[in-house]
Length: 151
Image 1: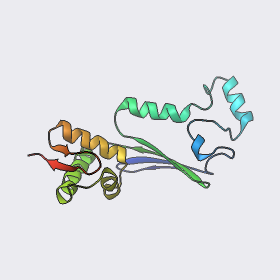
Image 2: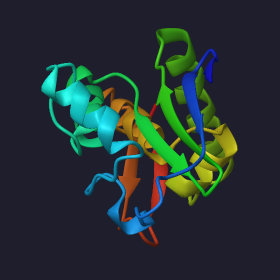
Image 3: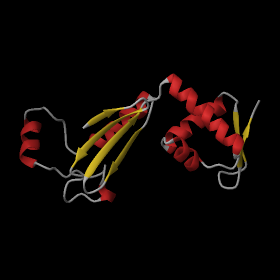
């Protein structure tokens, strides 16, 4: 199932991780759901190689430099969430981050992500941009420090 939202694409595959693949092995080891079909597709040069997809997706999103990818799963479903960073959405998020920091200079990245309902990686990207634009500064250590909004 594919869902398209203003800020993300969500791809859901029902069935969860394949049997024999643990959470710790996700993205590292490959377990085929149907080895006969995979073998046929590989011999027909339709697929390159098994076990490389997750890392290739992460690398492609990083190389693009826009948005993030996140994987969520349990025994019943598997989600791939691609965030979309469009200018308007990005500006709104940055403004909201500054508003939340103004209310609580000690707010954490995780708390910002939770309140904005976006990933911590997206928050980190916004903060990096705000710092580069000389609008935000971190005073002190990550733990125990606080945010300072620059004028």
